[in-house]
Length: 434
Ligand SMILES: [Zn+2]
View 1 (cartoon, rainbow, N blue to C red):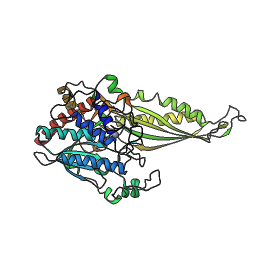
View 2: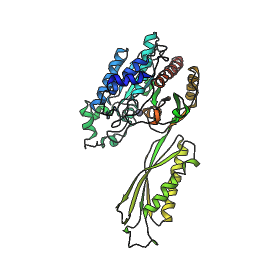
View 3: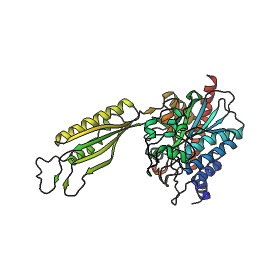
View 4: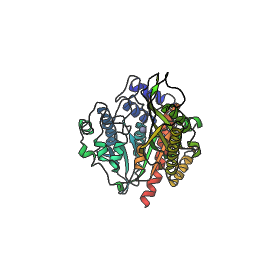
């Protein structure tokens, strides 16, 4: 697949119906295609890990476009790109953006779509001569996906000052390189990384357009949707310990088999979220059995439960219920259990005021409203802890993401541009009046 073919594919079923108010579908398609060439894989996906030369080149490309569009462009110590377009008044900016790093062999929309829709809004203003009432920023955050160190959303956390320096400095990548070595290889330093924290009074609002990475919008036949909030994941490590033994010589009575307890537990976990809320989910996706032999009663089973919900109280209630369930399943089988909350990120709801404004914007653009939760974390989750935040999802075909087959129709992407544009214009008007 060459540049032209991604662009052609995007333009194949687009007849220009949304080339309105300065927005240009051809330009958005072209830019998605240009970024798709940076770190391109044989399958037509991209490899742009955080803090790689590919991520750096993608950022440089975006900075060129920003400069051409009249932005003042800089990079902070964490490599985050900050493009600022002057407004009629000084003061806090309306910011929009996302990331350009990817998972290994990832898709062409996760991240780039948020950056390029934010940029397309400014291009449209330039064409129509609109000057934003307050400054407008496009942000490109470093290392969102976590594919380098297994720890993501590092750039946005550096910007908001939320990073735990000790934890970050202890990170090593798959090749055993330290955080400092990796970041120096792309021309930065650990020292400057931790100085990237901004005065967050400079940002009055943050908005992000992102592909849904799920199937709900497609099933409802909606081009885009309003994110109600970003679910905060809690990871509970569970270790069941029993007694190993020979599968042939140990009678069934009196066995202390941790896998039997774990099996019961995994099956019960799946029925717990429904009692808490419609949005709660709990998943066991990792399980290690040891010694893991065909003819050996296991001695130990380790697993992790990923628990998420939009509401923190509901999420934490579910974590407690999962703990109780693990203890009971262990007790019933006479095995021991250890429980440890390995990580817990607070969910970030989108305020009702912001959601109501987004609903109005959908109405003005004749789009039916659908509101949905984001189960995955995003840079908006980090910014949303500090400043008012909005997130718009664009339909993903088949819910496929983190894969070269990731796809969103150009028409749906352009609905994302118009929604962001109209919402930003309204929000900036309000900000200028404050
Ligand atoms: Zn993303």
